[in-house]
Every structure is written in C-alpha cells, then in structure tokens.
Length: 79
Image (cartoon, rainbow, N blue to C red; front, side, top):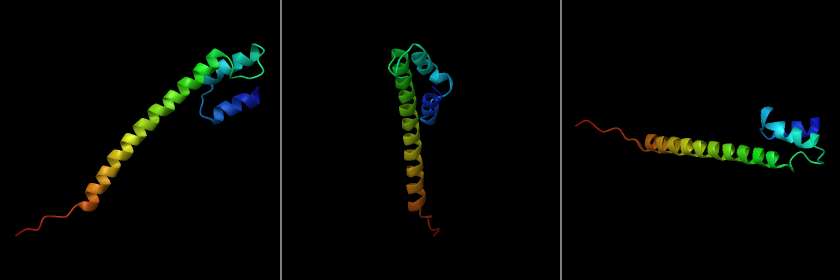
C-alpha cells in the first residue's frame, strides 16, 4: 500500500487525493485504481492539470508578445 501511495504522490496527487485509492485497496481489490472513486480522482487531477496548462499557455503567449514588442522597438528620432 505504501508503494501505491508513493506512486500516486509522485504523479502530483496530494495525500488527501490518495484516499479513494487506499479505500479501494482496503476493499480487497488487487489494484488501487480500479474503483469508481479512484477513477474519478484521476479525472479530477487530469482536469486540474489541463486547467493549469491552459493558464501557463496564456502566460507564455503574453510574455512572447511582450518579448516581440521589446525586440522590435525602435525609439523615435527627434527632429
């Protein structure tokens, strides 16, 4: 069971998010991720990662625009 939990923690689940997996093993299943609650926990974590990827992509695009603007900036000459 400790190995299962460590594996889940290593892919970014929190200790609280591992509870459905522990309960699944305690119910006598060979795997911690075959119960509906475990599958739901996977789906929730994937959705959170997708949301964060979207946020990071937006930030990257904004920074890229700022970089391009800065690189192409040419001060106006005073007559």
